[in-house]
Length: 105
Image 1 (tube, rainbow, N blue to C red):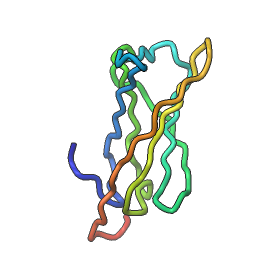
Image 2 (tube, one colour; image 1 turned 90 degrees about the vertical axis):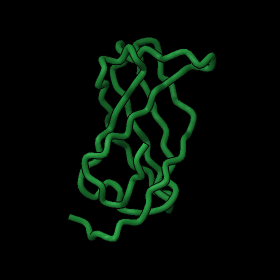
Image 3 (cartoon, rainbow, N blue to C red; image 1 turned 120 degrees about the horizontal axis):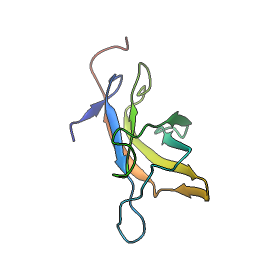
Image 4 (cartoon, rainbow, N blue to C red; image 1 turned 45 degrees about the horizontal axis):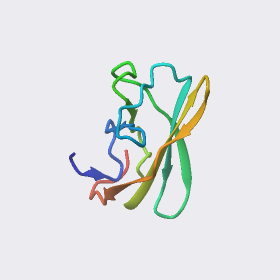
C-alpha cells in the first residue's frame, strides 16, 4: 500500500473482512457498512463504505474526500457491518497518515 498523506483526496481505504477462522466475510446481504476513523487526537468520524466487488469478496471501501485526512499521525480504524441477523464489528486497525507539505485544497 502506498503511503497516505494529510489532505490526500481519492485514496481508497479498502478493508477485507475475515471472521475468527480467517474466512472471508460475505458482505452481500449487509444493509450498511460504516468505517469509524479515530484521529490521533481522539476525534471519531463515521463514513459510509461501499462494496466495490459486490460484497462476496469481503472487501469494503471508503474513498477519501477533501479535508478527511486533516491530521498526521496514527489513525485507528474499525468497521461495523449490519446484517439482517445482527451487527458485526471488526478488530481495530492502525493507519499511519504522513504529513504532506501541501496545504489543503
